Image (tube, rainbow, N blue to C red; front, side, top):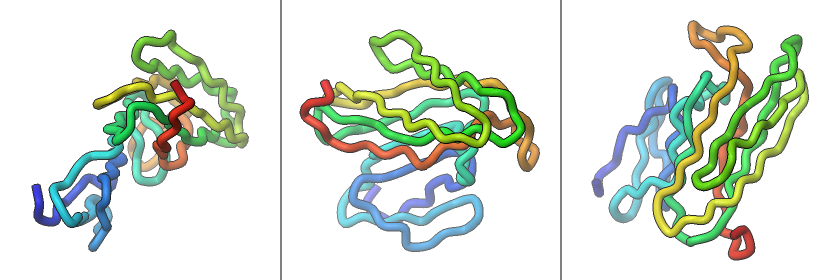
Length: 149
C-alpha cells in the first residue's frame, strides 16, 4: 500500500515504519509514508487510552535482528496487585506483578530477523467504557540493541 492508509486507533495499537499521521478521528488514524506502508508494531488488545484487555499480544517487525521492546504497566488505584503473564517466543512465561497505582517498566529482548510476537494475559480489574480491562500500558517502543540477544 503506497497511498495513505486508515489504521485502527481504538482497540489496537498500530505503528508503521517511516510514517506520519496526517489526520485522525476517534476510531481511526490516517497515516502516510514516502514508500509502501510497513508495519513496525501491532498490539491487539491495547486500547487507544492505554488500557490492556484481558489478552492480546505485542507484535514487532524489526529492521534489525536484535533489540528490546519496552513499555510501562500501571495498576489501577484500589485494585489488588495484578499478575500480567507475558509469553515471549522460545522463553518461559514471565509474570509481572503490577501494584495498584504503581508503574512497572517491562523490557523484553527481541531476537528475530523477522516478525516477532509476545502474548499477554491478565485478569480483569473492572470495566471502562464497556470494555473489560486489566492494567494500563504506555505505548510500547522497539529499540535496536545489538547486545540484547
